[in-house]
Image (cartoon, rainbow, N blue to C red; front, side, top):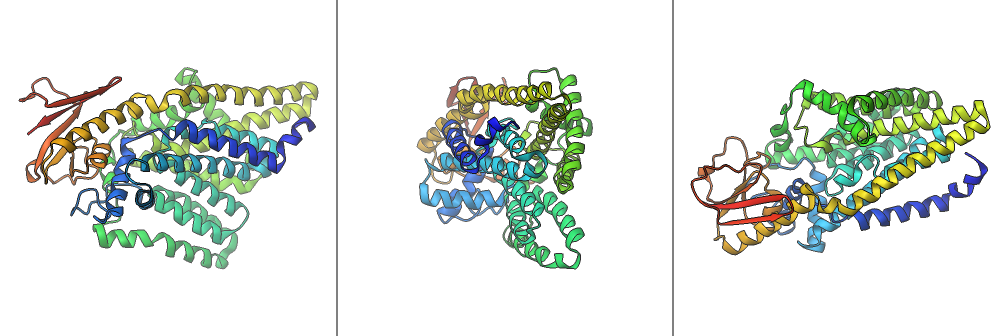
Length: 461
């Protein structure tokens, strides 16, 4: 980078830029909502009110994939209450998103220099990995934990790595992949001295599975069992190729963007590893994550599962562009200098435009604001018309159960076990959105709500 950029790369300037970005993220995205997140919030709600770590009273079903997020939402609910909890949880998701920015900067500084690392980190911060979409979920929190685990491992701070990696597994079970990669690295580097960090990780990480076995009967989330093998191998392989490239280069046709991103990612991996071989575990983790989900193959519409894979591919691709531009600078002098400037400004400007566009309406889109407003209105109706002991049934139960405080029969199978039958529960209301409506329903709906394009109706049994 030119000396002109050096004042911008001073630690206090970088910190102020990071803090300003965090404020913008919170202001723009703390209103984003997701029904899947409300399943976790419901567990936290019941924990905070003394019902227990359950979705429905007296039903010990582990229906959330994130134990840590359940516990965190319980703490937030106890302090902030029902109305404020979703905004606070989304704000924590934004903080975790910004934590990823700092972690990426620290991880890449040795290979790209402070300027290159700051540029890649800034791209993460303005949404170039799609992190803004997942702020209500645990996705950003676990990604931040995993990234900081790699940062501490790169610096051979293995006890810190063990603690942060254990926290990541509490936030989401698939973080065990990162722990496996990091554990292998620790053993290879420290040999017999790896026993201490590995023991610390084992003690911390096994606390939840032991509790889950005693409390729920199994450490495996019902959500994971329900989503297992819900896509074909070919469909999910295509999803793993096309979805990250749609985040990276949404304006280009699929075939071109997939080919370009893969070429850049491979080039980025090779060039980064030439500069710092200690980044190899980070690259291996991304590949391991993609291979693991190719085996699990959940619904392709649940795109947040692939966020770590998207993050690694994007970081590698941007690094390739920067390193190629820097190579041009070294070999072509003035032309190379302008190549670096054009690439850097172009990447930031393009993503900044997308960031502004998304920040304007993400909390009002079909699957976020419109669905949220519809389900909140239905929850109000059920609260006013349900009798004590009544249940409702729906394909999506998180938001309605959270705001109505009614037990739910989950047709999606996330919090209701597959062998349970509707007739076994006092289900008095059925909530159906327009994707599942049928023309030959035997009765007329008693209520309907529509916000934007999202429509759902309520039937009484």
